Length: 138
Picture 1: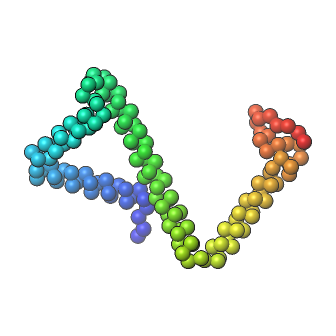
Picture 2: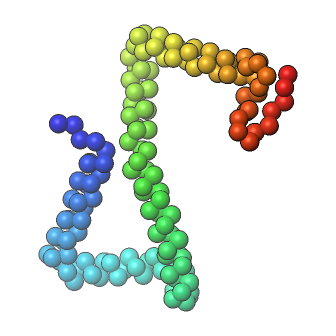
Picture 3: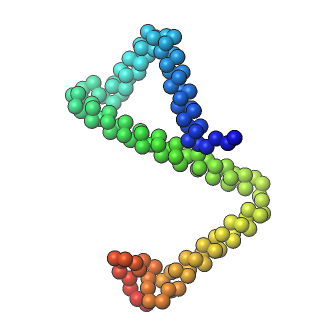
């Protein structure tokens, strides 16, 4: 059975959460001191200690939003990007000719399609002609 990236991400997050809960149960005072120290370092690093409560809330909300968007984007697109890079590395190391001919044929087909719908290939319309778009006739 092959796991997709969403399942793997879910398993990793659940494992990390269970380890955190286990550490909290085993070492409550040392973990609490460590978390307080990290909070202090965070406030000193970003100078949050001199902001009001509302300003801290706004800053932390924006930071949380940006980090959330970054993590979501990385979990959605990074696995596919890594697979693409791995496939390219495999091709560069193996030099599979069948892959090269397939890629060349696909590129030629796409180029012909672009040329057939371009400004010169279409009678009476430009490449950007469409609803609400103006074009200059040739």
